[in-house]
Image (cartoon, rainbow over all chains, first blue to last red; front, side):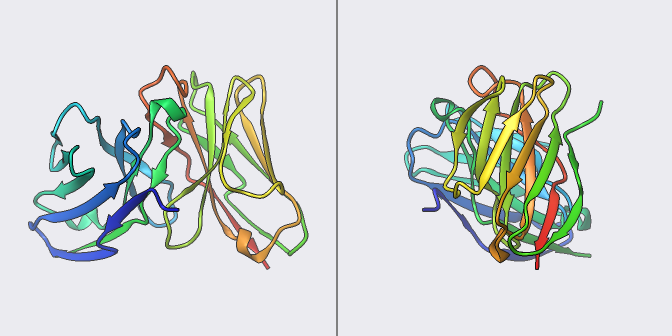
Length: 113
Length: 115
């Protein structure tokens, strides 16, 4: 069964707009929540990650919001640029399970100039 | 510094054949994991190795096997290939599965097409 559910499947945003991707999980043992960015023909690249002891983490134009009680986390891409057009995957893992990643199904983001 | 390197980058096989994929982790990383990514889906965990020992196996049939060598490089073998094995096979490396931070660094993958 899919342990991490991701939505939407795809989204289109205008240059300068905000992209929001949401993920939900059930396994309360998860203690590491990374986001990966993948361009066509390439492997996933770690974008930003958060642990459940904080509710928000920001790196440049990318922000993760984390709601432990709701078991949800989201990625916000501010001031979206055409170069941000890619597929984004949320994931989750647990130290107790040797950090084996469970991925969401992915969101394809298209930024229109 | 070199990242995770995988070979071959692309290959085509026919049903019933066998394939071996290779991975070299980032220098200093001792753990290697393998993931399968079917087109349009997120990666699925196949194997994790640390210090040459298997640390975990995902929900894949026994046709899939792997090993890790003393230099921490790894091979993934798939026997009796099926059409459904067509996918991008990703290798990821990390410092350690238990003492590390959880960060996995992926290679660019080996694209396998089974005809």
